[in-house]
Image (cartoon, rainbow, N blue to C red; front, top):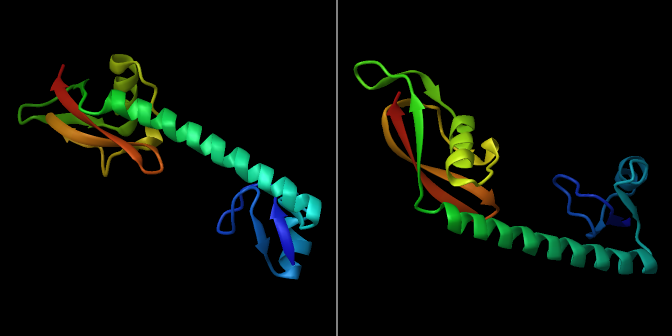
Length: 148
């Protein structure tokens, strides 16, 4: 059965896509939940409009992310933490701490989930941290962990 997606559906497609799916999947899952509608001449035209809107929104979001990335690239952010004699921290510096430091020092709001840290920082020193702002747009920021 041919359907037009009304919402983004994981592992299937994005809003406005015209897809061929199994009859039972469309009849029992997609249509009753309002995720899709049967494809007709009018709904296919409406899907084209949805795709244009989605593409325009995606383009705006990407441009905004590139502008923020240009502000962040090459910047240095300091995070203060309590440390012992060997430079080991009492506790750790997490992605949330990095996001807060970027927001307070650079005046750029960054979601902590966008900060790419393999594991929390546990030593003093400089570390390059990648912030993923959008698909394909990222910025590298130097995080300096200093002693209080």
